[in-house]
Length: 266
Image (cartoon, rainbow, N blue to C red; front, side):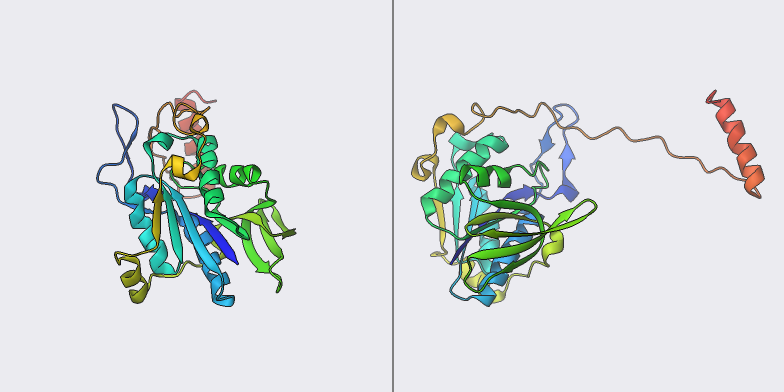
């Protein structure tokens, strides 16, 4: 059984800064990490491998050459192989163009049983790429997966899907696409032996360009993207709140009324 995990290298949002002049994200000097929801997707694939040792866990990623650092982390956690699509031709892709590129990458790898992906990436927060890949691969899909189980014959999966006001229990056949949330599991740490293996010269990381993946170059990249980010900015800080003081509720209410009258709110 082959399980594919879609992973993305993203800037650590705890240290993201915005250029006040250009209104763009300052990436220089900001560390990159494995997207948190993708870590949950990888962990679920590794749990499946723990249960069925014959399972092959394949991580796919689209990004610049330095994304190999993130793939090394995936190998150190227990992934079997990684594929990186890195090409200037796919640079600047929006979610639609990105899903086209990753779909081509997955098709170039071969058959699979399940694709796990994170719910969304913390740098874009669109939650669109996973479902778009499923549509282009003609796969049944479930998003916001918080529990997962698979039948002994590995032909049917049962998932609990998180909703705003409850959950759904859904069964679907493999192959399928599932997008994961943090409640699904707790990602494991890298192991010492895994780090040594992942950092070896013969680590199983394959880098492909767009042509090698069979990408349609008219459907990837900035020019092919139907959406464009105009600018990024941080919201203006709100004015600090005021504490209404008083010895009891009646006096506090009286003081509040006075404040509202001062501002001509009433």
